[in-house]
Length: 451
Image (cartoon, rainbow, N blue to C red):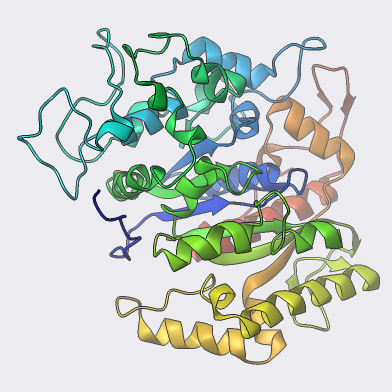
C-alpha cells in the first residue's frame, strides 16, 4: 500500500481557506460561518467567495438557498428543497467527494494505469457508469478536480446573498443518508464489491486521506478571483467530512459555548469526537493536519455595552460582556493555554513547526503559547454577541444574512414578523465585519451597509 500523504505546507496562496469546527451542535458554528462568508463576499465584491457544505445536516446550504423555514411539520427546509430541485448527486458535495476519490492523483498520476482499475486498489475499486451528457462529473485524467463544476450561485435562488458568493451544496439525508443505499446502480455504480458499498465519507480508517490531498490541490487551483473559501463541517468532529476540511484548509475557527462540559469535550469525549484530542492531535501526529487554530470565538455572549472591551485576562471583545461572563471566558482561555504548555501536541495545533514555515512566525507563535496569558488570549480568543431572537430567527428562517438586513419589517414564512432597531443592526454588522477581517485580512474591513 502506498504511504499516507502528508499535509505538506503550500506556497502562499491568494486564497484564504477556513473551516469552522466543533464537536457538538448548537454552539453557533453554522450561523457564524454563514454570517462571516456573506460578509466577506459583501465587503469585497471584486473577489469571489466559495462555501463548501460538509455538514451531515446541510444547514449551511439551507441558509444560503432560502432559509430553514418549512411549509409544514415534516416538510423539508426551504433551502434544502431548492437544493434537491436544482442539483443532482453528481453536482453536490457528495459527487465532489466521489470524484476526488476516483480522480487520478495529481501528485502520482500513472497514465498507463488500466482504465478499469481503481487508482487506490481494491479498497476503492467501485467504478462509475458512463455518465449521461451534460453532467458535471469530472472527466478522467488531466489535472486537479475543478471545484467550480460543483458550485452554484445562491443569489440566483436567494437574492439576499451577495452575487459573488458560490456554494458547493449538500442536501441533508438526500446527500449523506440516501446515497448510502445498497441498491446496486442507484447512484451510478455497477456491481460494487461488498466492502465498497459504503461511501467514502461513511467509512472507517484512513482511506479519506488521498481524497484530502486532492482537495488541497483543487483548492489551490481555484481561479485567482476567489479570495476566500469557507468550509462548514459536521458537529461530529471525527466524521470523515470534518477531517477532509482539517486536512485541506489552512485555518480552523472553533466556536465555543460557556458550558464547561461542552468545553471539556474539546479534550475528552466518550464518543471519540473530542476535536482536539481525538481528531486534530492524531492528524498532526500523522502529519496530515493542514489547518491550524486561527481563533476560538465565544458565541451567544450577552452584551452590557456596545463598545470594544478587553477582559482582565486579555481577551479582546467588540462589546462589553458581563463581569461573570468575562471571568468565564478568561478561565476557559487559561485552560487552553495550560493544556498547550503541558502537552506540546496541543501547542502544535496553533502553529506549524517545520522548516518550510516562516521561522519568525513559528518563533512568535511558540512565544505566545509558552509566554504570559494576555498575549495568547489576545491573539487567539474573541467573542460574538448574542444576536437578538428576532434578528437571529429572521436571518435563519429567511436565509437573510445580517450584513444585508435593514430596519424594515420582515415576515418569515412561519408568520414571525418584526423589525430590528438600526443601532442594534449596525452594531451586529460591525462585529461580523470585524470577525471576517480578523479571520481573513484587513482588506475585508469595509464600511458596513446602511441599516
